[in-house]
Length: 330
Length: 192
Image (tube, each protein chain N blue to C red):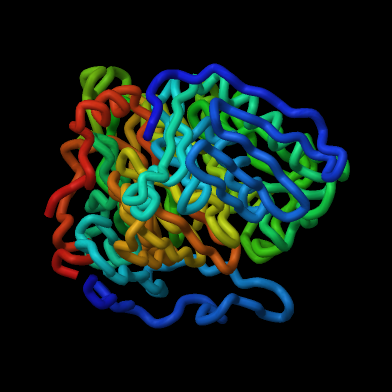
């Protein structure tokens, strides 16, 4: 069923005379879109997704560099990051497809697959549609080809080197820098901490208002790095509507809910069978085990701290089966 | 498949106004933050799992029940940790050999920073350590943090927290000698 050889064949087909969009191929996977759907074809099957859901998922896969572990666009299609290489699959993590022998998986160099994904989202995103935005904050993606929105789909993930606000590092967001307070965070205090640095210590005595910083985020479900302790990364983000993917963990991932509420649907990573629903409110902190997939729902825009361990040793531990599934035993 | 069950019930009543439904007040939205005396813990509905797998706790509940400045480990990822606790009056002096970051979750916390005359720890020391009485050294400055403010506790400094009223902090750091692990006491599925 699955091919493990590296595929290097990619193509972009001519513009469709009907829809105005191009179709793309990666190995034996073919991607096309029409006015409402993205269609994925592979040697054993064909799958459709609403194009808004597909573009939101594709946008995260691009922005996160294939992320940690598996990015399930839905219950059928997705990618798995092998850190340098990427598996693209259909039905691989779906019990029914597996049982029927309809699953398919091919491997690519990440550096070769990424340009195709970027070309696809650029071509398939119409003027006014922003796949990073909450549905209430963007135009619809439907219809035939109508311009583009490269300014939105080429945003760079914000990554502080040490901490937001330090001299020479990422700076707090302001109206002047193009980051107004989001409509759902209009009540979040914008006060600054008191910082009194003695002469010579201005580059070490530093603080900023993280909640104000998050209230001005212009994207959803897209963590940015705000403080860095070696491989320990605080990656807070603002969440509204649905996490566009089901994230299949290959390592433990921690969440601390900073405001409001998110409910997480947790399923088995391999089979997709439901395991739990985790409702997190302000102040709650919890781990996502390394053998699950999760998808969050946030009715009101909320602030979530995603805490990651970016150690280069972890992928090797995962390959050796030595990475822990849960962070502690008690 | 077992029937869904609640692994924990909420301990506290509602927090800020209008939190039972999508908050809409006067045509706007109400952002719900937690506070030491006003938080509403979430829960796990188990379908086919063990609630312990989620190591689920709440930093306000931890702060409510721990001793002042007890640095309770609420998150652990290999040797990296998130500690949570309650600031109340003056803390001991702490020191470190790597950066740490403190986030005020409720109240107001002053952070006093000193650059010791000589390093108090070996360069490879991990986590926060007690620094004894106020170390001799240069004053680096101070921070006053309120809810949502994140401050740097820079590598090699000595620091002291002070809070006029009980406040809540979390710290991004490394497991060290002042870290307190008591998972069964704080997590759903343990003593919760």
